[in-house]
Amino acid sequence: MNLPRWLLRHRIAVEPYAGDTAYGPTYGPPVEDVPALVEWKVRTVRAPDGRETTSTATVYGLPDLAAQCPPESLITLPDGRITRVIASAPHTAPGLPVPESSEVSCE
Image (cartoon, rainbow, N blue to C red; front, side, top):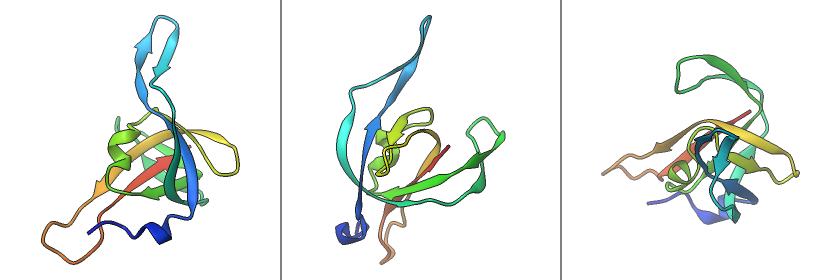
């Protein structure tokens, strides 16, 4: 069971991180109009490398959102701000009657 689509009131754009080159980071083609629920809240999160950093927005979405935007990806929020992904995680509970979703912490 997935997170109900009627809860995903916002639309975001995702540019997935593809890696670093001699000229800086590269990104895949942008994916527009991704359904999401955005929470603008400042909190401390731990990045995949273990450092603590500040997140200013958390994006909740369907279970595949975490795979679409790995850390370092760019997300355009509904207010037009472009932010970088700090960490993303799918939330699954196989066999339990709770919705599956993804959580993405953004700078």
